[in-house]
Length: 449
Image 1: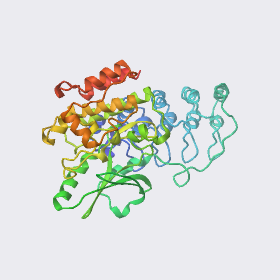
Image 2: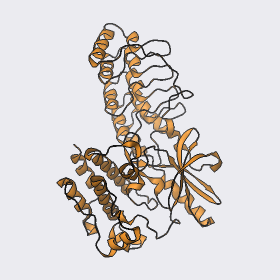
Image 3: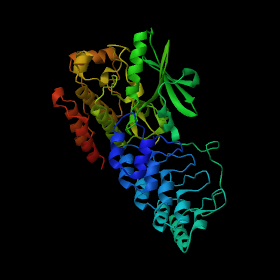
Image 4: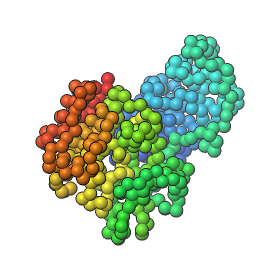
């Protein structure tokens, strides 16, 4: 962290880019003071680095040890261009630090009128009192208080003073410095506090729990035997799932490797899987056409990144069960659902999303990029119809009929012509004629506008 922090302070964009290109490097991890790379770039005014970090998925609401977010620092140091970048993200405008100060407090105190006006126009509250009883208006100089008061009145803000409440790390506020998890690889199973089983599949049982005051999900792999060879393979393969450098990839935080138990640990996301959201009402999320396309482009970006890696990750099957949804409705590829080399060899439990050639060929002979594109096409169909593919048939029957009898999802009337055409292109019977994910992303991007 010392190197990336220094490069962000100096504005060395080239070194920052090289550092970000390493999948295991976590741009959200804080240094000894809790400053993430985005904190330093926002504080020092290096807009190109801020833009780069945001594009890679830096958390805009991450806090340092004093509970400052990057918006606090950009507002305090007068970097309006960076403030505007952060405002375009899902930034918490009224987040208060350990002193009870919001970003607007700092913009007012330091006399950055343009920034203060920008913040209030975006609904920053002028009546929040810090722990000393001062609101942002109390910190204003000259006529700035009148200007901000007028904007707040026009917006219909409640101007009654909002008294300070202790919402520190030991109080009510939830810190977003969860990225400190990325410092760990091997985790002692006895340090996990598993509270509730939330799922059971062929590959293992999944539990919700806590580790070092963080919400986590622990997946205990279901294996009939444990050998020294499996332990060696597990230790070699699980670090490849720790991909922290892309916003649409949910990395494995760490793993436990005991003589009779392999546990894969990832971040807890309350909305669960895309399958749960689409078909089981998870998170009470309404998936309209626009949201479906946003999920699709998130998935395509994540898969494009996975395929761009020089290193090979353990086997991953793309379907809606293996995509998870963040609280901000970002879709992420769940690396905890990848299969290890020793796990369930030759077994496929959800063939409805698998390409016909992948069902016919050995793992070593498959074109994974083309097979994933077929799976993506089925997922697009699922997002468009809100239906489970071939739900009326058993998995064995579905797999046999896709591989041998030409069973395919049918594009129904009511699906937009552009999306129907894209589904057909991605499901080309000739694997060599299917597009790559980096070709799909700009097409979906146009469709979302």
